[in-house]
Image 1 (tube, one colour):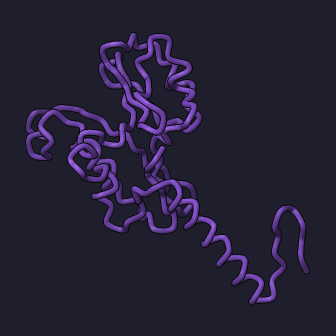
Image 2 (cartoon, rainbow, N blue to C red):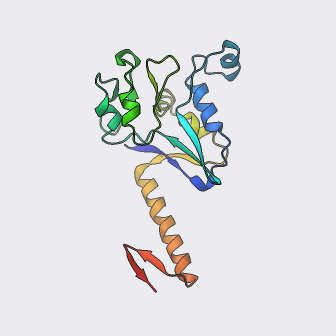
Length: 182
């Protein structure tokens, strides 16, 4: 995929703003007041899970070879082209839940109606308008970032290098590639 949502776990404060923004963006009214008045239950496609003192936002990774799409007997879960988001087509869904079982991240859930699922689509309508996914633009701490895969990989390498350099400077032993340096 060209772009993906990257999570900066150290910045997430567990406010669940991303979940609310997702629910609003996928509601029929696209407005929180109308959503509450109508009683609509749109659900969210990002899940903030707590693990010890940390909160971790989890969403669809739009895998290159998505297990959910491979498990779907009707093609309701599909990708239009390589590098594009993995999407869900409600009309083709039979409600079997195979995609839910196949997702290695546990981020696909059945909708409250039973037929159909809730799954991140990267806010494809917002992307078409030049906007970021709702969860990303709503995050007050910028724990969610919508960036190119290449940029994400470079940032991760830089962070690992900084941590290794800091540990070495502090006189701590570091591990790299399974070998220990004194």
